[in-house]
Every structure is written in structure tokens, then in C-alpha cells.
Image (cartoon, rainbow, N blue to C red):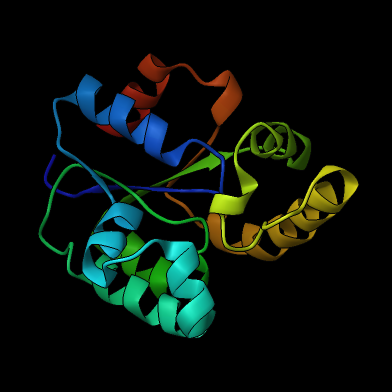
Length: 168
């Protein structure tokens, strides 16, 4: 497979976990865009957000994303990556885009069991506040995610089925 597979979806949707599984199953390299950004900026993403703001982060994110041009394999993106600039157009033009879809409640369950303070937009959020945030943000981002080449219900789609969908 020459074109990379870009995984998109809301934070906590499993892009990194499933990206590694897919890459392994397909014999492809795996790259996490957020890890590449951290290497480039020399600090954590929450630290960068706090120091420079989201606009500057999104510009760096786009630059790092575009530096992946010509690479093959499975590339997990950040939750907001496809939603800024013309990033989704770029992803679709240069690869196959797989959306790992979840319901707000599913994302709430997953994010409630993680360290929300490591995620710039969620610091200190819990319970109903977290669910309301997810519902609002997911509604804003869904039009971008829904443009993906392939959309799967991440919870109910086994790895073998994902591999078969991507090999078509």
C-alpha cells in the first residue's frame, strides 16, 4: 500500500492504540503525529498550549502533518487535526482516512477513565461537564470526521474487518 492510512477521531477514540494494531497486522510502520509534534516542539502538548495557545499549536501541527508527505504506513492524527485549515482536504488527497467513530457516551466512558489533565481541552473536567463538552465538541467536529474515506464504529469493528476494509 503506497498511500498512508490516516486515523482520525475524537480524543480517546483509540487512534494510537488501533493505529499500532493496524500497522502490526498489515506489516506497516506506525507514526503518531502527536509524538512527532512533541519531538519537534521539545515539550508536552499541554505545556505548548499553555505557553503559545491553540492557534500556534495548530500551525505547528499542520507543518508536522505535511512533513509526513511521501511516508507510508499508519499515521494517527490528533483529535482536532482534520478540523483546522484545509487539513481534511490534505489528508484525503494524500492518503486513506479512517474515522474511528464513537458515541459521546462511549467517549465519556473512555475519557473518564484516563488522565484528563494530560489533554489540553479537558483539564479538570469530570462527570456531566465532561459529557457536555464532548457532545458539543463532537458535534462541531463531526462534519470533518464524516468526510473520511472509511467510517467505522470503533467498538463493534474487529481488527480483521478493519484490515480487510483498508486492503480494498
